Length: 160
Image 1: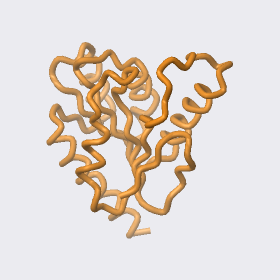
Image 2: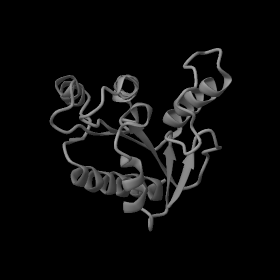
Image 3: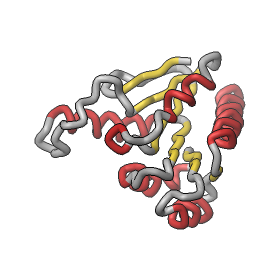
């Protein structure tokens, strides 16, 4: 397993998984770290927008070079990833994650975990239903669904 955090180059020969979802200025649970631990023996690359060196006081403006670089990296990594995982922490609002779900819902590459209690769970459920996006409610189900999706992508890669 390899983890690449923003703003580093993310091109890889292995299956790539974008870890989208709740960060909420650092208040969301560190679910990305749990995923990385689960898959540490796998030959895959995780593209992680949660970065160790992020300054939470960074001005969120197109004119701020650091913020611009972060958002561009996230957009480029989303375009690049074989699989996009989006986790909605029930203790957050996660507007950017909702935005990313909307942007990539029709891509065929999204996998969503939306536990009960997320403030816009109904919207997420309906969007996933409309676009046939795999949707789970627990972390354990997310890990299993991601393992399955990785195996499908690997079979597809082997076939071409």
